[in-house]
Image (cartoon, rainbow, N blue to C red; front, side):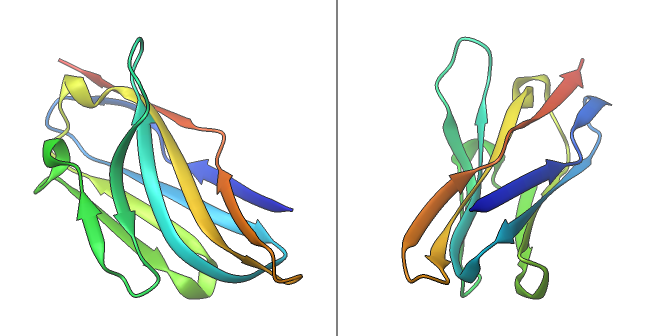
Length: 120
C-alpha cells in the first residue's frame, strides 16, 4: 500500500557529490521518520541518516559533516545530499519510511535500493 521510489544513485569519483531522492506514495495520512540506510557488499545494512517529521536529524558518525538529509513534507519526499564522497561510501542505499495509513494502521516500508559507487 506504500511505495518508496528512490533515484539519484550512480558512479562518481572520490570527492564528488550525489543527491538521492525517495518519494513515498500510497494511502498515507502521515509520514513520521524517514531515513536512509546502506549496505555494502559483505556487510550489514546500516543507518546513514534519519529525519523526523519535525525535521530533527541524526547521522552516522561516518557521514557527519559530509551528508545532509532533508525532507519535503508536501511531496512526501526525503533527500540525501552526499558531498566529499569516499570509496568506502560505495553501497546500495535504501530509503525507509514509517507512518500511518488512511485506515489508521501504522506502516514501515523500504525502497528497492539505489547503487552508489565511488571510484578512487
